[in-house]
Length: 481
Image (cartoon, one colour):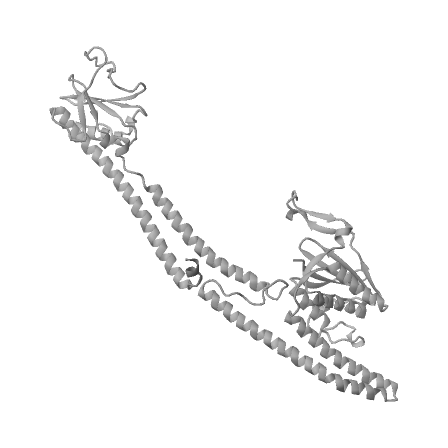
């Protein structure tokens, strides 16, 4: 059944849900109305029994087969005092007696209803407005049939003998029809739950697909989508997989072309450098070498950017602090003014812990702060950190690097000591081929921060900039998991 529903169209789902709702609702209404009709028939039968019983009592004729009539056995004297309650024999020790008197100008009918459960609410009977005695007796027997109490009826006309009347098939507990209204409600609720559960299951597939689609390209995200769910969703996934495969193929071909161009330019670039070295004019030789380095650097930057978009590297768990510190050590080995500031503590959200009694953060000791573990692509992430440091050295003379983390994200902070830069330029730094205000005096092609931004998005984060007292601060934020 699950496989059947997994491959159906939403149109078929709509038809099935509509038909299922109609069938379930119709069945519930049919059961409900049937239960109501059976109860009305039961009360009508009790009313008719009362009417027939009146004639049997008045004329001393045989009652219907389902009614037993006999002379009542009394306790003590057989003289009847009309004021006091008669003492009937063979009754339960604890009994509730409901007494009723129906009088006309010609006769008087006395009734005593004996029940071990309750006294009957006579106030619910219609008021006596000169209606026939038979109708009034029918209303009394109808009231007796309305409750499960297995009563015994004692009746007499005027000063005649008391008659004991039993009719368990009319007003006994077993005579009442089963109340199936709860069954109707249960069927209706079960059908509603079944339809809503399948509807929510279908909509949840679309919601899960939207979440997976947002995480595509991020570390841990899917490079392609498993085709599942309704036919419409499967068609969307299939088309998207074909599109992504086509785009991946284009990126690979672009990287192949750029690699070929970079390789092919290597030989003439080397020859140009050799020939430039033969030029006696030092200023002309320097300009030629600068142009050659800029040309090859531009090709390498574009190739690096294309490779960063391809997500070719597999993510794994690494120590972000160790990665950043090793990069800083490499810069220090070649004499670059780069400093790493270790964190004294790391902030964790204690509300996510099973031992966290409330919100807020908790600071872990320095030993734990050194072990900021993240799931990332180490080569790509290292390239992003190196680009930020290079950018700080180019535009700010020196760089100070630190790592901060909480339970969800990790941040690599790079501060420089550059000059003032406008907010408008800061907001555009991550665009391709956009450079700072003093770019005319610094080597580069304007793709370094674009590569950093791309790598940050692949790790579920972003790169941002803010002004600090000494210069500009770059913050590379990534998700830890």
